[in-house]
Length: 156
Image (cartoon, rainbow, N blue to C red):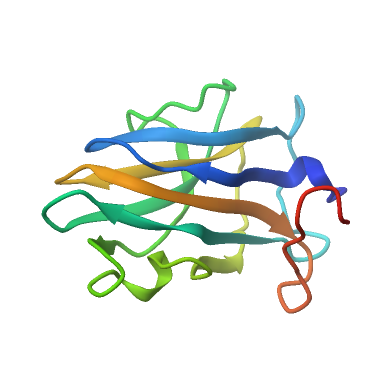
């Protein structure tokens, strides 16, 4: 597997939405016969908050899934194959938010599990109980979890 700019699914991508599950950002096409990711060398998923994720009123919750599907429009109805599910985080404002949802926070950084992946890989965002009014994330794959670095556009 070659890792490059095409392995970034989200770049400061908004997660503002009402209570629902939706595909956010871009998908990665793993090809017609995707291999088991990370078998030869580990591959990691990183999801970081670029703009604080907040709600407009009452506190709610949010979580993310790395999912694969046979179609590029990865199904948000639960039929896609879920490979990673992040913890559930509280959304409100900076004073009450889970720290991971504040700008610069790391929502998830971990190894991709072994297993069968379908052709398209992407990030599903689930907003629970209330509307997320602002917030954005970066989500990407990397081979070195200790050395990854986010670069500003056109600087790497």
